Image 1 (cartoon, rainbow, N blue to C red):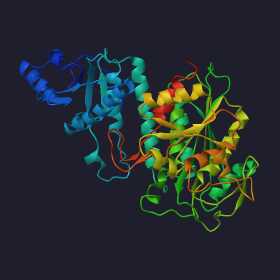
Image 2: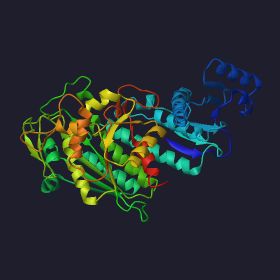
Image 3: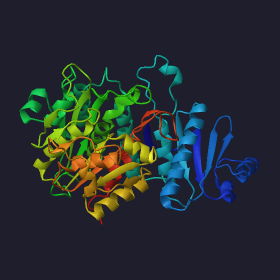
Image 4: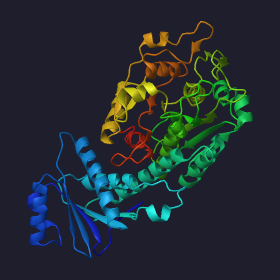
Length: 478
């Protein structure tokens, strides 16, 4: 998908945004009869009207303001998703957008929804040429958007497309080693440094959590470090992003049921895709921030040498963990990455992981469960970014009582805390490995969709990238 400013000449397909049905006559190129038809359509409580002039299609969207600005922005995105289907049905290759409404942001967010809905993963479809969407370009009249906003849209949408594709790739392509190669390619394209530790280097570092999860696999693990450091960064100490990179999760010896569980576990590296593709956007946009990202990666299998419940693992930090469930593997490798982050003396560390079914059960597909020890200003900034991008956050407490649930009789801690408060006890486990400002984001409920919903496609969603990128774009600004 490409975004650009419309050059001279009329577009064959054009979307006009208005917030007043009485002003339809201001839309260029429509007759009085067509204007009357549009007004009639809006009188019937519809918000999108289509005029087919045979040589040209005009789509008019009536923007109805919501209670809050963030809800109004989301209405624009959803309208964009509706228009995406209409444009492709009309075989449009390019559509132009003009914003006549009082909401300056309407054109931007309508285009955002249109583009997000236009994603397809067709790599393995032999009929791809037949079912591919025709729409490739979204143009704007110069009054509708700025050149800076066009660049932001091009970058953010590209990052989300790349993340979705990584999540959609199957294990027989995307091993831990291949994931590291894909991240290296992102770094080369966007301009950030990428270093990957192989199994021998991981063993030398004694990353016990990552190595334990990898024991049942015939594929080696990787640990990938990304860094973007501009000459004049606003932050004196780096922001560190950590993403869970379990490229496939069978549950290990604690085997998952296949139906509605293991069948979508290629998406268990969604956190890795999220932080890697956010790094792509940060570098492409040349944000004035020093940012590092870490991705520990492996698959989790019940192989002949797999770790088992009852094993005691010495982690990278030196702490010991009693393993009671090998399907609670994400926290094992994340713990090693969080301990690695200490070497940077970071200003802030955030991790993203498809960590618990408990988070998914609690808030479903409508938001991200988060928790952490960061200050209230940071938490507020994340919440505001979540609302602005409609990738909303629900903060859970990290009360001491939840820590009691993961106390072990034979080791420092155990890797599960029982049936209750599962998302929080997972967070309390991770908390053992941090000594810096930190936030944990559990994206289990939002990272992968089993059916198309608005601008979110079937498969990988890229959910969380816009929220995190928004937070970073506003970081350090009053």
